[in-house]
Image 1 (cartoon, one colour):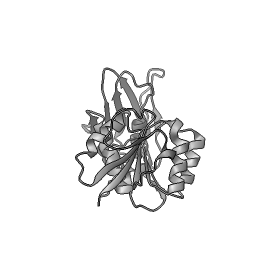
Image 2 (tube, rainbow, N blue to C red; image 1 turned 90 degrees about the horizontal axis):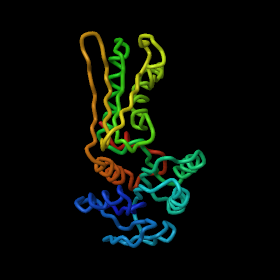
Image 3 (cartoon, rainbow, N blue to C red; image 1 turned 135 degrees about the horizontal axis):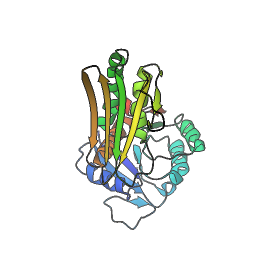
Length: 253
C-alpha cells in the first residue's frame, strides 16, 4: 500500500531531508507540502497554509514550529487525519489541544524520532530491572553541538525517565556534583551535558558495578536518523484509530 504523506514544514532542514528520503521509499510518497516559503521548487504542490491544502493524504508529518500548531491541530480534527508531530516547545494550552485532537485523530509524538533511541529506551528498562536492584550506579552523559541551548537534552531526560520508571521512580536526578562534597547516593542518576563543535547527538548510559561496567551508547551522525524515524512512524500511523501513540508503538518486539 502506498502511503500519501502531507509534509508540514516541507522546506525546512528536516522537511528537505524527509523529501529526499521518501524519494527512495517504495511504500510512501510526499503528495503535498505546507510551508511559508512556497517559492522553493518541489516535485509536489506546496501550500502556504495547511487550511489551503486541497490534496487528499493519508497522514501528516510535522516538522514546523509551535506557532503553526493550532492551525495544524484544527486541520487534523476536521479531517480526522493522523499526524506524526515532531515539533517541540508546545505551550500548555497546545498540549491540551493535542489531547483533544487525539480523540478525533491518531497522534504520534515522541521526544526523539530516532528508531535507535527508541529501541534503547526499551532495552534500558530491562537492564535497569536487573542492574538497579543489584546495586549498580547509574550515570548518563549526553553530548551535542555548541549551538544547543537546553541542557540536559530532552532525549537524555527521556532515557533517565525510562530507567527510573523501571525502578519504581525511586531515583533522583543529579545534574551538578561540584556544589556538595560527598559521595554519591545509592538512589541517584547522574546526568552530565557536553556542548561542543558540530556533534549531532550522543547519549551514553552507564551502569557501574563492582569490577564491571555496562554501557549503552547511541550516536547520531546526521539528522537523517530523525527523518527515517518520522517516515517509519507515518507508515505505522496511517489508518490507525484515534488516540495518542509514541515511537514505542512503532518498535514492537
